Image (cartoon, rainbow, N blue to C red; front, side):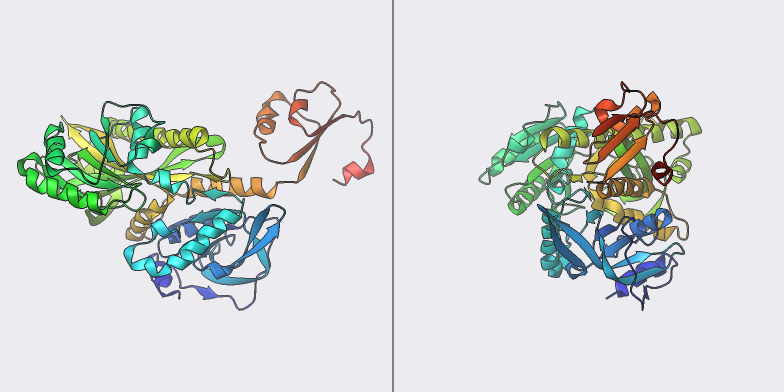
Length: 488
């Protein structure tokens, strides 16, 4: 069962999974972060959690490792067994005599996320998706949100509204209703699509497209990587029309077909290789966003986003390779970071304003952007090509394995967000007693309390500024400290 996972651990220069003979006890005052996944592409995430809170994050490859218990209106999920990593980097498989209450979930095991060779696991994916619907514990993303985050057209519309550079685009959609909330943008044209579209109509659209070289590709949650992606030219419209029709025939009713301006990412003039970036962006507490990492790959310019070579490297190495000055490098990195943060900010704003029907325990905490660098008169300009949900970390693991035993800190901020949301969940229904409410600098602590926590405040000032933020406020003047309070 652990053979594939052990091979990844070996690539990281780590020891194979250790079977614990004795069952571990659960700790109610500690979080329990769980990743529903087959495991082979999530070792990087497990290692990141082990740096911050070892032995309290687990890979769960099988739904039988989870127990469901009813609690009031919602069910509570408990962990019966899991695969974790301790503070010494030892991966272990543990079973728990007392099941651990799960405080945070990342579900990488959805039906849409399965590759063609993983479809035998479809029943497991359905079970994990059922668990999503049962619990109210915090989640990063979720089956409802991935319908939006992995929609190339949706995220491109959001990014364009934030003045992020995108390719000129024609988007053909069976239904435009999903995109009715998005602002109109001059670089993106929405066109109603019918399955009965005539060949001559397709040719007319492609002929009228502003760019002579363009990319045809599907958009939807199933269409990641380079599936059905083709790079076309007006010099061979017959082939372009044929590939347009082939892509159209494979679409479901909620998918779209995109015709993109070809972005030349060649690292030098006439080079067959282009610079492709994966930019990772994290949602921090209070909706603060931060670009947490950038890795680079070389890709063949005549192939789609998935047409990569086997090499990956840092942005610093790329700038050295291209002989970019230090000032230009810093300017480029700042521009890429701002691009990433603008995209995630737009996603958060859309979720908050338009996706109110999605359970509030689910939110987009982590994304990976595919960015091409276009060399324009010696200046590198980043173009957003695609947005990927949390399932994007496989490329980071590939990078870390190539550069083992060195590891990045790209996922650390995401792990901190997991823990922050875990502790908020653990505090639900609890009471906090504060004696002496402090200075105005503490106001943000009380304003940030948007959870179901009872805050009991005791202060000698009956008009203290924090009074409106408390569940119960009392005025109490202490001349001596009672024994019961000294025991708190």
